[in-house]
Length: 338
Image (cartoon, rainbow, N blue to C red; front, side, top):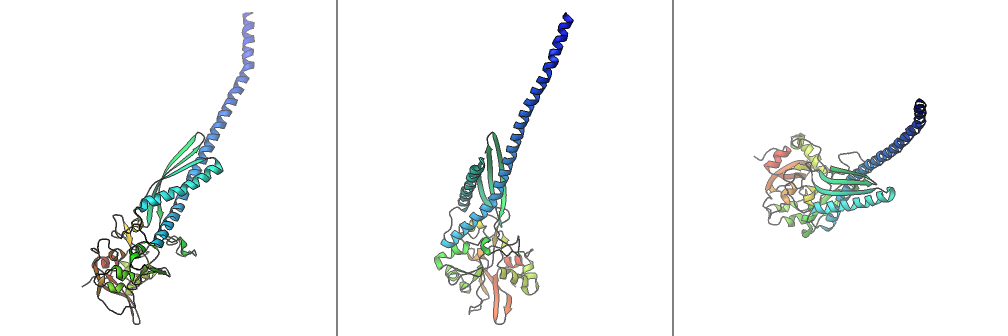
């Protein structure tokens, strides 16, 4: 009888075993489905974070252009361009985050930690933190991006887009506001009498009556810079000037400091030429150096040093010239003053 009881117990266990196995499979399937849902949510969070990250340079460019354009229109320098631009970018990113939450139910937080000058003066550095929250999934991503301040050039020098994408130089508008202001024509800043008045008391200031300079910030492609003066009949220098290019400079101010009305700063910046008028009556050998950060010297013209004439093009009776000191002559490959 005992053996029969063992047999019956074994048969009962065998009958129950499939049910146990089936239950285990069902539990695993439920857990697997939960794992798949978790993976899908994590993937969606990762995608949304990437999408937010891709929008930061676009919105930053918009904010930069709007900030520069406002400064140009009113001629007022900014007390702290970095904080203003950082806060404006963050505000616009909040609007984007609200749309994400409304359309997907996903909470997105984009905090702009800092906006500052980059090691490349034609870029600014934006540091941000992106946080994506969906149910029990939280994804945090730290982002550091260098964003170009250049417009159509040099990404596509043959672009048919309008100049509306270009970012302009606000410094001349800030410096010359009190002296009659400047006008814009054909992508150039025309100073009229304002620069001559600004340079009042500086020897040779009269050569900058009706001077001009570039309106848009465009990076010079002629590298090394010494090739400007080393070319036949200064043709590279002429092409650079005709296109209104800007050059990397240890002395020139970066864009963010230019928005604050500074011509020089502690960051790696850029400089451009300010061209004396070709229509002036007087002929001078010596005058204020034709580099923007020299002319717009910040400290009572203490750093507004002179240069001597460089005739880089002659057309009939019209002489096109710059005034350069030995330091800038060396930089651009122009023969030293003897």
